[in-house]
Amino acid sequence: MYRLALIGFGTVGQGFAELLVKKEKQLKKKFGMEARVTGIADTLKGSVLDPEGLDLKKVLAWVAKGKTLNDFPAGVRGRDALSTIKQSRADIVFEATYTDIKTAEPAVTHIKTALAAGKHVVTTNKGPLALHYAALRKLALSKKALLMFEGTVMAGSPAFNFMNYCLPGAEITEIKGILNGTTNYILTRMEEGLSYEEALRKAQELGYAEAVPDADVLGWDALAKVCILANAVFGAAIKPDPKKLPCTGITKITAAHIKKAKAQGKRYKLIGCVKREGGKVSVSVAPQALPLSDPLAGVMGGTNALTYVNDCLNTVTVVGPGAGRKETGYAMLNDLLLVHFSLIWR
Ligand code: HSE
Image (cartoon, rainbow, N blue to C red; front, side, top):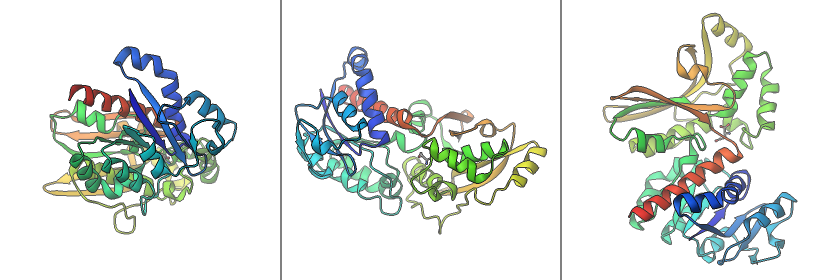
């Protein structure tokens, strides 16, 4: 039986909690895995903890009614995130607070606090991984704790796990693809005739866009993700600074550009790329007019995709959702199972 603390209970945290409720019996039957949420903390939704376990169904229903967890009729309420991490007696801490790509706070402090206490961490938060990967990995190793972050890139679609389990024997030299759902959605809808503004508004309605959509349309979100790939896969230490790295968004792509590309049998995609040449690792984000024969050219709407260039299979492309409540919550569920497998096989 694992005790879980959920730090951040917005779309992703709730998406994960809903899957835990829905799949409780299946997880026990199939994998012998039982988990109990013993603490939840969120700056907007409030906090509640009970080391004996919370009734997650009731918690979800409470929050769905717009009520704060500080008034939940059970457990200890009103604790901050750090107290929740400590007092919930959690074995695994799930960090899904908002991404701050400039400071990585408060998420990085949550993660460090959990790892320092020897707790395993599962996160979907891009800030800590893009800015502090090496330090977090070192801390996790020193505490024999696991640090899982599948959901930081392509939500629950396999990005890191695909490499770890399907390409471990191949030497990867380049990873490139569509890492931002908002911009891919906008480019798709513009090709269908919508204006940039209309398409952006629809992407916001669908919940793809970041709170400040500049992070999407200027390429910063995709840059954060290629930096995570560069640091976690190639051992680089590249910080996602759009002023210092080649990073162009889609704001200058017009209907005329899209029409011209179409006439040439091409399609614009915002491509994030990380390359290793010799000992040098480089990253870039820029719109590219790809020939329609490229597997990335056929990836439409909010979908993401990554092509792995490697010495054994040449190229392999993974296509799947890159954002969304259930889709990102699933990344956390999957990481929870991988923690479980690691612990039972230790
Ligand atoms: N704003 C991001 C996107 C969300 O549009 O892909 C997932 O990181």
